[in-house]
Image 1: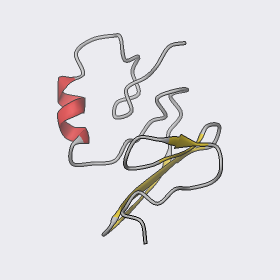
Image 2: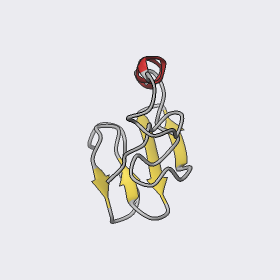
Image 3: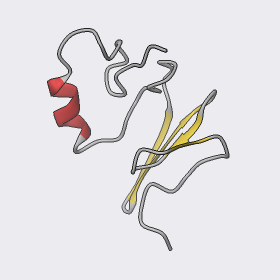
Image 4: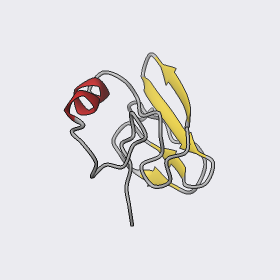
Length: 76
């Protein structure tokens, strides 16, 4: 299964994504790493939420969930 860069959307195996990895330290993902679709991203003071219409939510800690949006920040 091919995976994609979650910042630029290009195939992860193609090219050097060092700039993408560096940028991702400070910003949320923009593309689903499974299907390359643009994700719905919400940034809050406590973190971020990114959701793919096909694969569910991606938390700030990297876990994909099929069940709605996850809070990207610390647990309340």
